[in-house]
Length: 428
Ligand code: HSE
Image 1: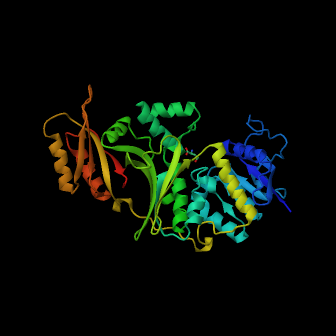
Image 2: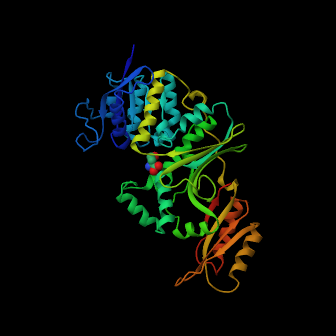
Image 3: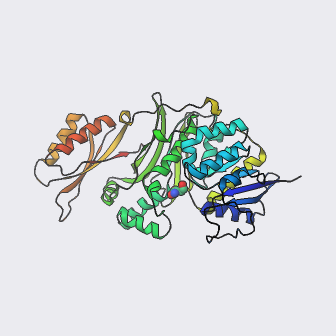
């Protein structure tokens, strides 16, 4: 007999409307012998114009009331935000013993361990495939398909808005501010773009992937975060001349010392698959002992793909498959030991402005040599009508603590006009 699963959907923005359209098109979506029927919706505004007619659906002003309603079997949270109504509603649904599906990366990255504890104590699933890489499989790949693997690192492009902006800066030769303004006009970027361009959205996603990959509690607070707002067009052009493309890379690496989770603009060799991931696409590499490397690329946002990821979670609830939320039971989850980024080692890109006078390059290279930093390549671009000359150099692999000490000394040279801009270069 076909079981009907009554779905409550809180949040009717792009993804919520996409989910309602998807379920309507599929006439209830019945992949596992169960049929999904929406029996309650909630959003900030009931009357806002939407691509989907909600007038026939039971309306709840309060998402918490919807979450706890006896008229739903599964609660889908698409409100967003790490706290506030999203958290209250998810907690209410779990406490009422209802499976929860969410696309909310901030909520899971910040409160994932506590919510997993609540879900597992109640014996109900808490699923969030849509929270990372939107419609592209990522969460289940790491949590389920690779549960037998020892994962060393996960790294990728997890924010489509930043990737779009960086790609458009390169292709059009426009500044960050100009491209961002256009993206906002076209509706690709939020009116407050901080979550995206500040690197926070990518940090939420990589914090979740780190927890899934390494079987630890998500720990957003331990992530080191730098966004793309300081990436200059000049950096993009200079990097390209040196054979690299700048990408916002989110990475989680495990070593004997612990786990390093970070998000920062990174130079990626032009022939690297991540360098060839353009526009709004997302992509990630997973590295493990037995698998070597896996590369996944696809849409990281959008109504259709993200709704399909939510639907996959609905199908999982229908099958009754139950796994720990983060690879091991919530009671055993511990935060990871964060690694001090100063201890990490990588090749680096430095860009700074110098006075156009004799002896400047010698002074810079002497300072670097004294600090123990070895130069790999060097580029100077004549610029008309400027007070200084930008120079760029790349280094061989160097500990970050050594490099930052060297940067301090370069910044103090009288011939150097600004503080060197540092970006790391990804391993190939
Ligand atoms: N704003 C995100 C992005 C999508 O630009 O990738 C939702 O996380």
